[in-house]
Length: 115
Image (cartoon, rainbow, N blue to C red; front, side, top):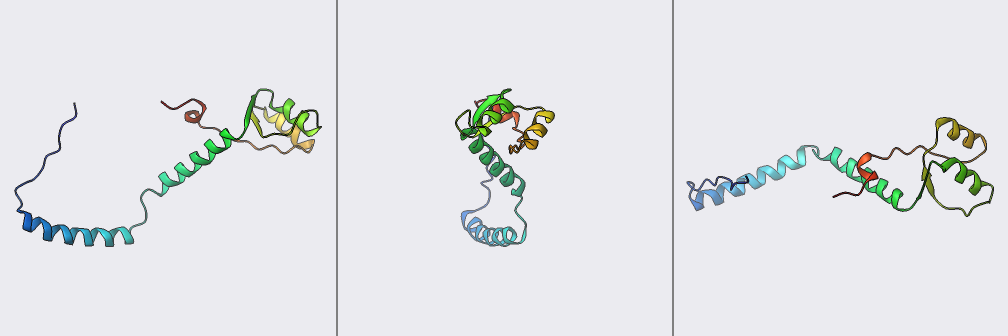
């Protein structure tokens, strides 16, 4: 069960105001000197943002990826951005035919809608 945090009310208000100003100044100096602790989280957030953008702007063709890529390359299907699943052998065969492919590992969290 959630509970209220403990509040230390034994310090007088005048003391807390002067202490608070000193703590704010010390905190500002520490923030400037210390490297950002959330750098990994920021990088991960940017990567997830770009991944979501890629997923939103591409069509998932699933297991038919190699077939659809060939059809688009030979002008049998309209050109569009696609993504799907291909075996390493299929990917190498596509590259040998001059079709650009790129592996894109999609995290499991992005494959399903978030609750």
